[in-house]
Length: 197
Image (cartoon, rainbow, N blue to C red; front, top):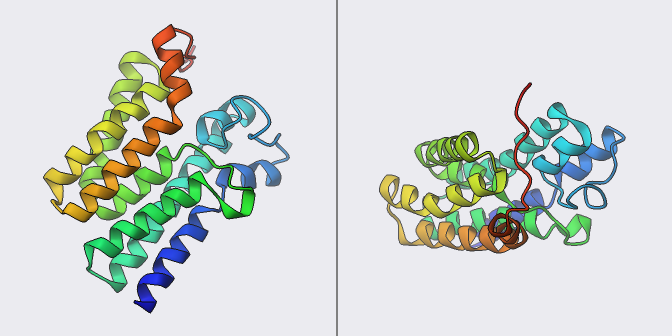
């Protein structure tokens, strides 16, 4: 029980380390919560600081979920604990205690959690995102499609009621956090991914 509480608390605090805000401060880039889309995530950091800071943000946010799950997997095999740890890291990113509970949308952190649970699921989510982004050129649509399909990938690769529940809840929260993007997609006002010249 003590180990479980430690793992869940650690995962939430780790998730609360907002990579975008940390990178923006270190790189003297405007706070992503007050510029661009207002979202402290990789896509907004791409707009504000370019590819390098966006890549750092994506990697940092993904590692939060991956490290939390990997550590938990070394200390326990209980799927319920793993699911709670994954959710804690994800919720830490969405509602970071260190940054006034104003976090990102959670795509990269959710991917890190899924990769920690099963590399095949993480790979499936990445391939889905890349395919949708390449074909339709909407980052939000790619993320939403990957989020919707990830529970299916997880069930096929590592069937577990607890882990499936975690994945379904993360997907539901991802859809909720992208509700403004969904509205813009439906109205044709969502920004597309810029094509290379």
